[in-house]
Length: 438
Image (tube, rainbow, N blue to C red):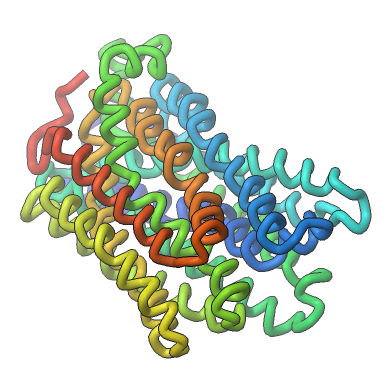
């Protein structure tokens, strides 16, 4: 049972709740991102052949990534729905709902018949389920970050605490790649027939674990205080758009250098690696696994560094690194050396991690407490439309037109420069109190 708003906690009780909130946020986001990344991995490996078999390889890949992009279009919808829910009814209940929605959508992907069975309706069903996934993950991020950050005892550790829900991204990526790699090895040639479905079926078990953990946490002190002081907004999403439109747009643009390259490095690489470089899917999966392992360290450490040296400073260092790394990445990929290709993929997420660690606190701190779930979610997820969702499509189209990976590197550099510019206009709340802002 949640504690009343006027209850006081001892230091040990608060520390216990903080640990529970961090664990619940991190494990929950791991499961949600496992579901989301699973789709992106399988899209690059098999969906073009199974659901668009009558198209040439390039067109089929574009069509498959088109369905993939629907999930990103849906994410701002989820941000608005669950941002409203989280600012009106609480962070905890919203997070339980997002986990259920995401889990059911992912599980049902495993049951979708291919083109050979029901024709184009298979792709239609995939599109609907991808939209459901997007709505779920659109509401997940804001709630999970706030659940951890709003339990932080002092302002000096918000960056580090808020970075742990971000840890769920590489953990989900690692888990998704690991399961697909295992199923690929077990199924062999039958991977295209039934092996790809197994990872989606497994997701329902993970969702049950996540629900059990999240049901045992308490509501955050910030939300309980907003309720106690009768400051709950009647329409938080509308109010935050009216009161803080600049922060919403700047945080969305600030994410471009993190969001777009990430999905090129973790989704487009499977189509590019197998189709152009002729590298085995097992090698690519193993390389992305190693990239996600490095992220386990770099994301929380970057969050810690932002507490010491400033949120904006660390974030902009990461954006500058992303701007340059795209060219290094494709130079290594095009070398023809398996070792250099593996290294390019393994280190591809390091610049992203330097941005992603402080990002949660940077965005959440930009919005007033009673509108924070809606504002942070909208800013974060709008980037999905302008960067994350279109990125594999744009990369595939650019390569199709130019037959050069450096054109894709130019797109990555453009996104990094946009992030640098947008971040420079954001206020830096590092180590400053945000608890009294309503």
